[in-house]
Image (cartoon, rainbow, N blue to C red; front, side):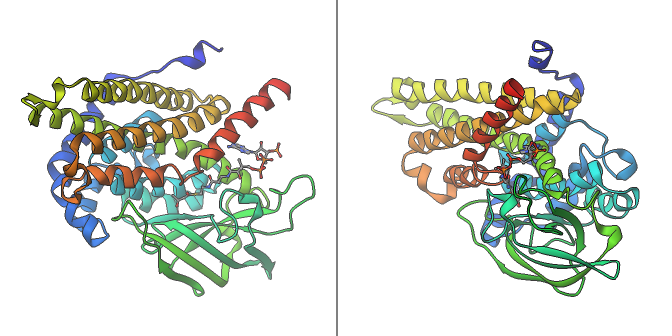
Length: 392
Ligand code: CAA
């Protein structure tokens, strides 16, 4: 079982898909990046074309508007999108965060009504979990949903919600009963909420250092009436559903980081061939060679860990995948950070000039280190899950 768990299974189908996404990103998306980052949004033209390629629902079953692909295809899509424009990969990934718990734990009606339009790219969605006083500590949340006359009355304050200001639908977590002394997570439930419902408010957009074209917002849900059929799965199980969702999505963040690291590697290599100093191309200097060699090694190592985690999902080995996807998320984002710093160093003044797009890589990856579980939390998950397996 251990050896089986260490395979990476990648096929011709995956490589053809990678080629299609790469071509799309270079031909149809690259020309819009600078403008989109300045304007703080992804232009309609890009979003429409992403739709044609089916990028919003790569691993969603075809019956719900997706492509029926596997977890590795999602990772490859994230990687290739982020290699050119990380903000686009984030926009798409958060749709996945919304759809995953509904696909895993929701009702057939919820899948048809809410997953299908998001997978097709017709509707935008977000996952509203983090609160002003509860980020890494999900079980510490204070939002509530009280059942009154067969409906839930939702009162929640949510912050740092990606796609928050532009979403049509939200998955929202809130307490339906108080925490239990030995299991604080119990009593949290999950709901699907529509933006148009009374009491749903976008309070403000939060400007961030990177992913400038991605929308991050603070939200309030004030006495929002949520029909009972919009409860996802069972009451009180929302924490577990959120954890399973993050387990699956973290490998996608690792994919994004791979894209950023790959972009940094390509940029520093190309520049060191083109640029000369002291009578030689930069590539002739050992300090530059060292940076490229280190990045090449680390990017390949990160790619293996990430594809391994995705392979575990493809095989249905979800328990093993929990640890692997936390390893991939933390390792790949740190590799990408180092790669981006090296790319800036090799480019010198051009590395810090915003017009070259090199410094953007570092700003974007700093967010990847934090969202969907800060890297310190990934290390806790790796340790806790390993200990659970060893000692019960
Ligand atoms: N997968 C599956 N189950 C898990 C799990 C995981 N990764 N982590 C914990 N659990 C289970 C445990 O097995 C345990 O179950 P039992 O009680 O049945 O044994 C239960 O959940 C409680 O676990 P803990 O005692 O470990 O819970 P905790 O409160 O001490 O901490 C935590 C858990 C790992 C720190 C968790 O709170 C966590 O992952 N925090 C990070 C939050 C996060 O990732 N936020 C991302 C926000 S979304 C986002 O960024 C969206 C965006 O807009 C981009």
